[in-house]
Length: 250
Image 1 (cartoon, one colour):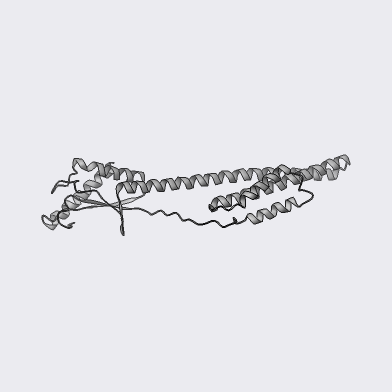
Image 2: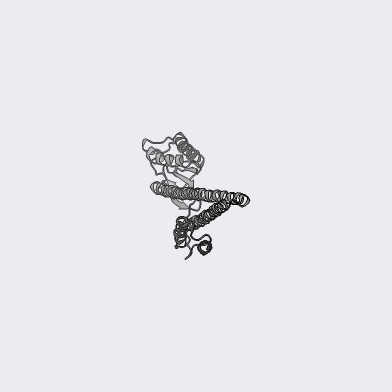
């Protein structure tokens, strides 16, 4: 294709890049769900039959609830804290119920009431299983949240690396995407073979496309206004093909 005079050997590469944006939202003053978890813990602490049965687990639940009530701008982290606090409250309640059931079993054993003893044993066993499942669920939720934070950090690092590479390539945003001008020294006048000095710019671009294979590029070759329109069009095409072949080889 023909362009303005004296644009000798100029090659423009248009890279269609998907924009990345990270939204920011401010966290509420008190994280959502923290009040409900506080209410569950208060109910446990005010239950005369359970309040003193699992002091260690109840204390751990109290610390988790206080942390969950702390204002946190990271909504994902705030929701994770509320979830962990809820699990710890459930664990404390299950442990307390297991202690109560164990106490009833001891009392009934002393009274030699076999029927009631068997019922309490089953209740205690179920309470222990529930407590164990609550602890395991809490560990699994914590691991999942850690993986989510790691994935988010990785995505941010990848976005920063992409931006750094685009800045190194000196790509300019346009309505067609990001445009990278590779310079006027890729070809000799009237020639379509790449010059020896063309590799530096093309190597950087080839490396970028190799790291992001899902991205696409359109290659446009240009000539000056010397010669006929047909010959210049053919020369432009051969120059674009030369760049394409070099990038594929990279």
